[in-house]
Length: 193
Image 1 (cartoon, helix red, strand yellow):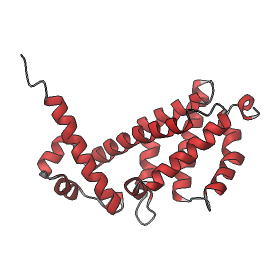
Image 2 (cartoon, rainbow, N blue to C red):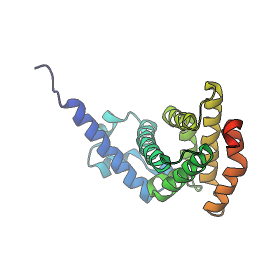
Image 3 (cartoon, rainbow, N blue to C red):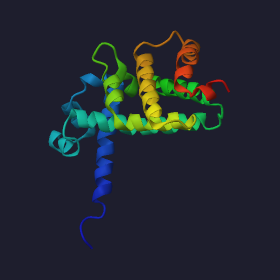
Image 4 (cartoon, rainbow, N blue to C red):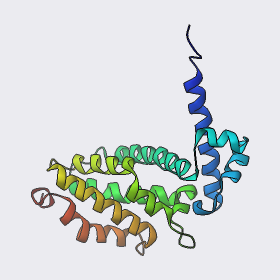
């Protein structure tokens, strides 16, 4: 038998433990202020061990955001699974995503306005967030790949904008989405259904 067949699983468990510890810290303070030494201490490991799994803070942040993005995407798609009207899927999907991020102290800290809002930067740069948003746009109805990519990028910007500058309440945000997002994101033949 060649090698340690459990090595990969142990690596995943250790990385998840580190990301869980980081999430606990993000829930207590703004993500931009959390340092690697704090994460190592919270995870119960040395900084050397932490750097074995994540070469720098940006790599750790990226891994955390990607893990949470997949989780949020699953929750959102489960929430809108029974909706067949593309307009309602779009609005409910966006509102559910906003709600889920806001209700998570660890994720909400990424959009804190007293420090640089690293959540907006991560959302713009993440290939995972881009792919998941494009998948959601495609689920609303078929369209040209270039338009899907453009609309997905715009949706990410709308979401980050609403995280940084929220509406008065969910009804206000729903109204904004209906008036300004639906006509642009949905192909014209679907917006009128």
